[in-house]
Length: 362
Image (cartoon, rainbow, N blue to C red; front, side, top):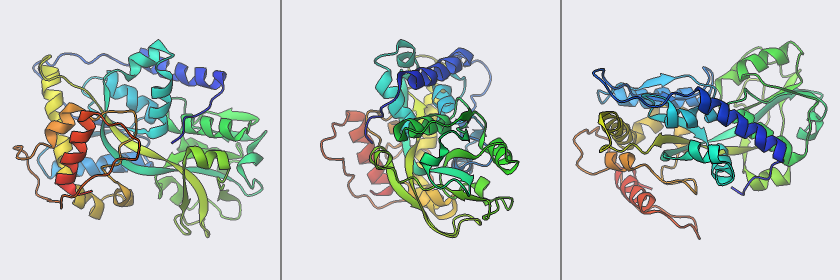
């Protein structure tokens, strides 16, 4: 994905959201007598993140491991959660949030602090940028001077919607900061004209029978600049009850993030690293089952498709070590992973690709 161009004001607003969350987050406390919890931060109750998280938790349960699936506001909260929140080893994050943080960390010391120690666990699925709008709005440009909900301020939808509008040079009359569920109700009540929601299709919220195809539709996103920055894709006809035809949109990748726990530091880090390794082994050994019985997006996951600029955590690599004690039988056929041309990889990422190919194939 190409580097995003943003206005200074918008970048400052997004950095402010990060800093507000950093201020609220608690530092990871040393592990005492209590048993360490394993937690994954996902998203809202009707989004794809929470369904993917539940699939991972179900796979973990089949191996005797408890993983708690926690709702959240989305990507920004999830990223900072694995950095700062006690007993939180995983969070699902959009790739453009990662790119934003990576790009501006060098210029913003607080952002650099937020990024420090956060690592890749696994790449996941593509997430489509949905814009549900009134029928009289025909294109993204028609959102100018309209009432548009762009997601709550610490969500990935908020960041992506802000970037999309900036890149398309579209200025809504009113930017509403509400969740997808609240935004849908506002749209049905004619209190807004459209809302953004970044989620892997099919997203449960758009299956609502209250969405009347005579009144509402998904906006196509075909702006050449956006197609150059994001991944062009299409939401197939009939994906949602109100959607008769295919809709061309753009997508971002979801990534499972974790933290670089140091098992030599203290008991908390040691147990957290073991938790990360356990879940990494669960995903790699149960990957075929996840694709067969989990959310449809699992069938699009390529575990070798690492986003540039981020390294895989050492504790993830530990979980992919052949012969590790925890085993969930689901062997894959090893092949070889490909690296995008011109991409310089870290030793950790090279080791990850080698081990993930041995576990699930590439």
